[in-house]
Image 1 (cartoon, rainbow, N blue to C red):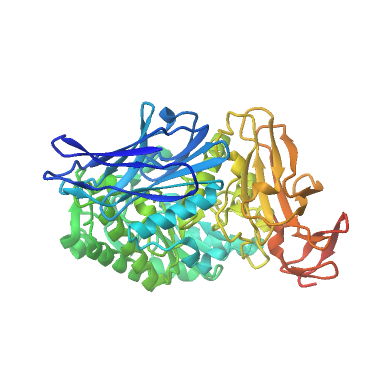
Image 2: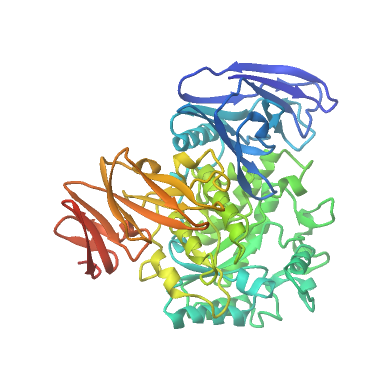
Length: 634
């Protein structure tokens, strides 16, 4: 593959910069621009890089399709590759090639197709730069897409001197090890003291071990909400996105005792409480001539559409977040969810280079969260690559657009969006697959996705509607999530073809302990076929595996490379396969009341099992599968 880079100045002049040829063989290569000009480089396309002879059998592009979120686009030819591609995975024969566009100190790079030519556009969104001598992309070739993504991210972070840690060096928040609830779908912008406490009390009354609750959406003082009426969700969103924040203090009509009183009462039923806020204050920023305006007016910036938000530099960002978080912490909160992060293109174009703004904003968020909450944060609406590359040490970030109840079409988009974005972010983060309901038609499918995700698990049930039986397969008796240690991802054979159209099953994989877990879905309109194999699970070791399917009760043994055909006859049908390596003619499946059953096994052999919880224990021994009722630690 030949790579040719071309720069463009603000006046439109172009000149060639570099030509690089990548031949066959495995390895990781960083592509660095070397462009210097007497004129300012174009803010929107400082450098255009062409990748010639870019041939593949199939490819998948992870596209930033909105300001905040990504989705997979399945490509048969180069011209199918969309603009704003943040990761490109190509397959030719058995060889996989990855191109990871990089966000550097000043520039962001994305991939796109120009007819039959793959190109990269490198830009700063700032018209005051005369040179680009930074890494614009990292590419790698090999047989394993997942390890290549990790290696490419590692090389990218090193080449840009980025502050970001790899996922293994980040600390996952302790609070998110437990089952939670978010108030958004239940209470929306009318979130209030009484409703929050009523819902927390419901969990206790029903014996559901929810350990934390998140107050979401705006609980604080938004003057436009007072007396406002709306008839549907669209009108509510219109009100939200035209409203600004006047004070950190809770809205007195909804929280008559203040935020601290609400949190205190909630903690009669849950152990931890989190508080939501967007980086902009509220959706339309800071209210003019308000208490908050007077406190921060020297660091406010007016956007072209008239909203007041924080100036895009570290000192200003940190001052605002530090004050906001100090107040939230003083009210008894234990963590925060920080929303609306991918806003640089929308609101800060022309203020400073995109890389610098992203670095300053993400460092300010992480520094403040570390100071006040020990690093416990859910990052949200932040899948743009400029956000992904520059969070220094926070561990968890959302990977999907908002949950929509009772919507089968949404679920198809959701599973693809989550699994592919999770794969993209996996080198750096654990992904949050969003809230869900326990009492809608998608409940069991949603619970399976959260069980295998490796991220937090929390619901957003309305008051009175939570179902314990849907939640217990996900958790231990004390509410601790049976959580896989790594992020879930599509299986290798599901990376390059659209499962909504191809008549094949779509599979998501992870590793509970040293075992494999594969969830298979029919996302099409007719029967779907495929295969189950130990090779579906990246990194799963062993020569022979005991396999248990959760919903049919089917059991069988697979050798290392053996494939077993499966058919899901109906649209929306699903299966969960647990694969346990057989050693000395024994394999523990675990307590099969739980989806990630291997995580219930502390230790086990043919004579004894030390178990995290009680229930129906399954194991394989000398050619047969056995089920026994067991108590905890027996």
